[in-house]
Length: 144
Image (cartoon, rainbow, N blue to C red; front, side, top):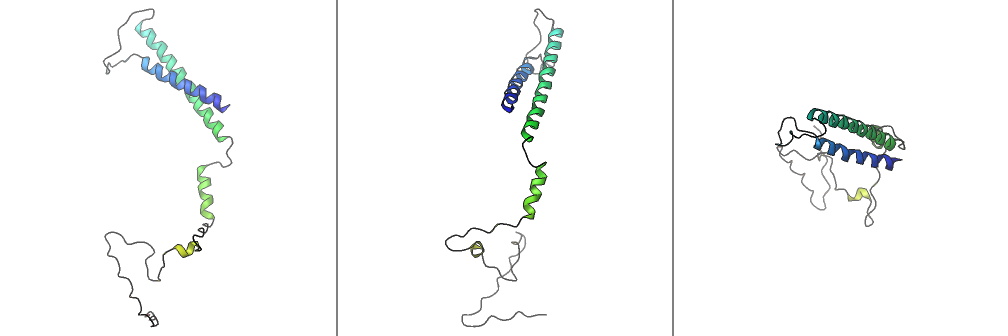
């Protein structure tokens, strides 16, 4: 059913493009249009083309809405926003082990005084804490 409506939709799109391109230019901005005698007057031809354009445009919109309804008919969720709220509540999965290391072993080491985010470009980068000499115990932090 969806393929049939899509085929009709594409045919209507091509017919609508052709109908719009065949219409007479009223402003003459393209340097073409106007003139011409024949079985229909210029006014009658414009009216027929306008009616055909409206009919094709209406049918195009109807097939667009039909395709939208057919596409959403089989979906379980009602909205994209509903699907965005679900992953936020779920815990993040653990990174897979690589070469015998777990995901937490692959992260860089952090210290208690390290900033949680990188500094801004205009802010100076804080100096890292000095490393204790090998064989000595680390100094206890001073409490003010």
